[in-house]
Amino acid sequence: MKKIILGALVLLNFYTVSAQQNEKDNLKKNEEAIAKSSEEKPNGWTKKGLFTFLANQATFNNWTAGGQSNVSGNIGVNYDFNYKNSNWNWDNKLIIGYGLTKIKDQDLQKSDDRLQFNSLIGKKASGYWFYSGFVNFKTQFDSGFEGGVKTSHFFSPAYLQFGPCMLWKKSDNLKVNIAPATSKVILVHSHFTEFGPSFGVEQGKTTRFEFGAALSGYYKFQLAENITCENILNLYSNYLEDPQNVDLDYTLNISMKINKYLSTNFAYQTIYDDNAFRGFQTRQVIGLGLNYGF
Image (cartoon, rainbow, N blue to C red; front, top):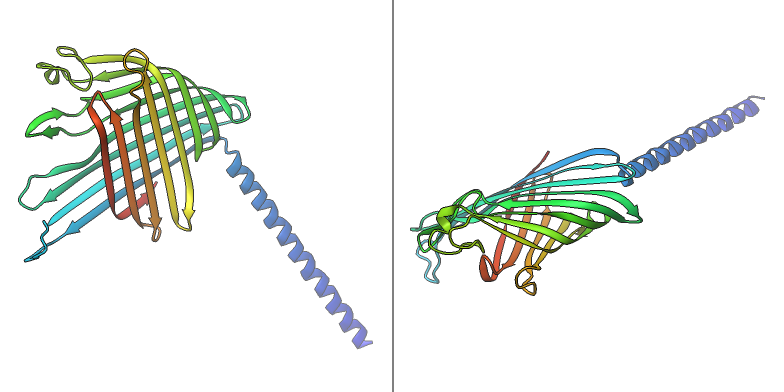
């Protein structure tokens, strides 16, 4: 009799544990499904930002192979604040970058200087397509010099683009914006055009207006575990003058995460704008980064 009761208790305990485990599994699956649904279709505002500090340093003492001691530092802020519901998408991005380099026996030099704001709003059309409109603004913080002569400073030049467009957006990490009727305004201070044109603005003027087509693309993906790759492409053609000379601005950012706060970062940017310089401008930065998300 005792054996029968003991067996019944064991069997009852087995079914109880099994039921509890099944309940836990079902609860976990429901939580994962809710989280996945929330991730795929977030509604309302989402905000995220990243502050990065990059540092490089090299020292040479009695180095027969040659070399110059130098130190450099770059700070960057990348902040997104986006809104989404079933019919509307509104993406906003603020990009700030500033860097300095000091080479032994030379003056401080800029290695980066950017202030950029992008805003893109779209209403659902069909599938991944949206009827949309965009605004893009970019300028710099500090003065630029060439041969000891100041050639630029804050808000000079400043570039403003805006217009209607069609947005193809599969996710926040993959989107293409097509704007066939884009207005572009270039602003410079009058003292840069006093003796000749500057950044495409004619002598004696402070603004230049262009009308053309713009295309922008954004693609961010996981290259490997703890390695992300971000691609930002902007193209522009001015219908009113030399439409074959397409302005290009491409940026590649690769981040190799070490831990929550440290990473190795690589940034490469190339610009072609014949109003500013008849050739490719390139910028490359690599170093150990201190990251802080907010």
